[in-house]
Image (cartoon, rainbow, N blue to C red; front, side, top):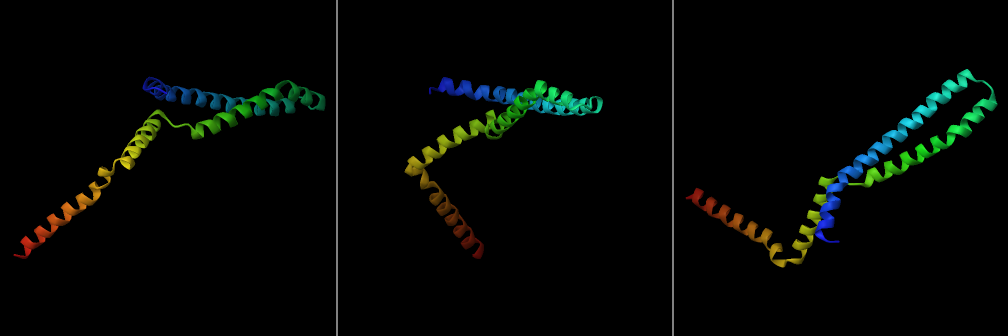
Length: 128
């Protein structure tokens, strides 16, 4: 995948996430509305045939909304935002570079040696 494609998909992540959040909310609202209407329908119509007819007609919409909520909820759980994706991608590239370049691995040791020498000099000056 070339850099143009990567940049394109990084810019689209927030829009994809927004669309999935919208689908998730709509499906939750649909299930809640189904339950509310079903409760009022049961109160008004006490015959079992009417209840069964309501379930046959509108039950498929409830099932679709529940599955849509489950699927989008799972995808939203694992989908990073644009900023998270940039951090993952840039951090992975940086870590790969650090692991491959042996000269970078010497820097922490050299830094510690410099600080230690400076502190030793400062302590000797303070004793004098």
